[in-house]
Image (tube, rainbow, N blue to C red):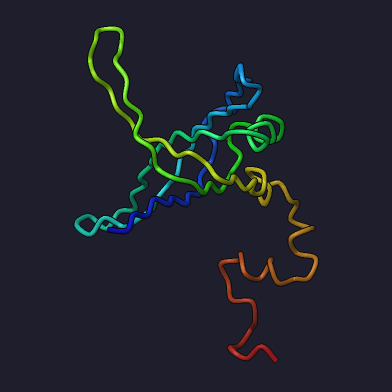
Length: 144
């Protein structure tokens, strides 16, 4: 029987990366992501936002890059595999949680990057301004 364990996520970092140098010299970086899903509740018609929090482990040179370039709020794309961690807590209770072991982390645009652009920059060609107004961009239905 074939097995396949692959995860691809896009989310925002919920805190700054936690980097540690292992005794072997290899870097280990732990990331915490929040991935949002927005949908309309079929019973009430209200928009609902669901948040999934995910722990990610990054190893090696990529861990060093994450430490250097990422910070809380930054959006990232993570590709890797799902891993089940098990341990006993201080009370002797068995605990488990799933984490992602990253094969690659892609740094996406900084959080709020589009929002920080001025209105003048967004409307240089006139297209963006027309798309975001409540009124129609043309006086009639024909654009010519």
